[in-house]
Structures are given as C-alpha cells and as structure tokens.
Image (cartoon, rainbow, N blue to C red; front, side):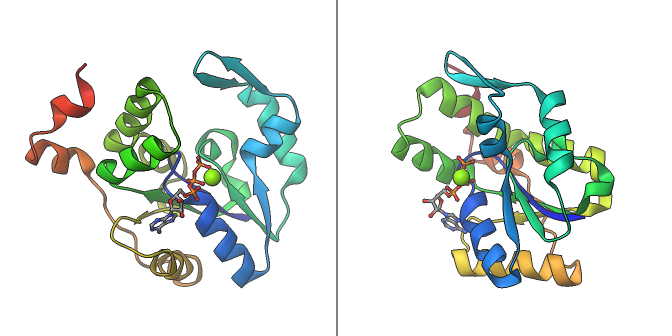
Length: 182
Ligand SMILES: Nc1ncnc2c1ncn2[C@@H]1O[C@H](COP(=O)(O)OP(=O)(O)OP(=O)(O)O)[C@@H](O)[C@H]1O
Ligand SMILES: [Mg+2]
C-alpha cells in the first residue's frame, strides 16, 4: 500500500513528494508521467484527456510497497487496497492564480483550475472514495519545510488533517464573481 500525494496543478505536489521520498527512501510513481509514457494523453485543445481505465491497469502493475504516488488523477485511478494514506494539498486560490500566471496558463485554464480548487473537487472526490484514508493540508502560509513536516505527521501519526473551505473565504471577500463569472 502506498502513500499518495494529490491536489490541483500548482499546489506543490511534486515539491513535497520529492521531500518525502528523500526522507523515507521511497521511489516516486508519477501518474502523469506514466500516462504520458504509455501514450494515454490525448490533446484536446487546452486540456488533456486520459483513458482512465487503461491507466488503472498500468498502475496496478507498477505499485509496490516502497512507493509514493503523485498526481492530480490519483483519486480516480487508484483502488482502496493500493492506498495507505492519501494527502490532498490545498492552496489558496489567490496564490494559485500567480502560480498559473507564471506558468503562462491561458485564462480559461486558470479559471478551470482555480474553480476546481475553490470548490475542492479533488478533496471531495478523494474523501467520497477513500474516506478516513484522506487528509488535507493547507500549504498556503506554510513553507515547503512546514508542509513537509505536516505531511510526515499525517503519514506517521495520522494527525493534522486541516478542513479547508476556500468557498467561504472567497464568498466573504466578495470575490465569487471574480472567479466564476466572465
Ligand atoms: N509548501 C509550499 N509553500 C510555498 N510554495 C510552494 C510550496 N510547495 C511548492 N511550492 C512552490 O509552488 C510551485 C508549484 O509547485 P509544484 O510544481 O511542486 O506543484 P505541482 O502540484 O507538482 O504542480 P503540477 O500538478 O502542475 O505538476 C513551485 O514553484 C514550488 O516551489
Ligand atoms: Mg508538478
């Protein structure tokens, strides 16, 4: 059973996965890389579509005990018995916008990904499927080191879940229009 790091693009999955892999001497299974190397990505304009069923099969063969798995698709391509713990990194939509602008994402792609983070879609879907194996960590206002420590606590002691609700924050700031209306 593997440790899994997931969350929207730009929340810091790979940064944190590399830190944890180093500390725990685990090898990294990168879901996107596997999908890409297996020719499962189909470019569709701005977005990539993936054959999820094929990806599930390929992953089944690659997963072993000493792995840490990373990818935003994790909640959709893994099975319960493959997972020790699934950590969803959450990042403020206000911070994510600048990450995406730096990456030169299109306005559309920014809106889609920020919207997904505000609604907490990945966290919701992960909890729906994997229930108490899922923990959230709010990386905003944490350094990379602090985030790594929080994730280590979750892995070793199963403590430190953070309830994250960006929708409430965005509503309070009167910014719903900014994120959800053209
Ligand atoms: N805990 C953190 N606090 C602040 N910045 C962070 C943190 N973790 C990562 N970052 C920074 O955020 C940016 C995005 O991180 P990273 O590339 O690891 O995200 P990702 O989730 O792997 O993205 P993708 O899904 O697109 O691969 C990087 O510039 C990284 O240095
Ligand atoms: Mg990455």
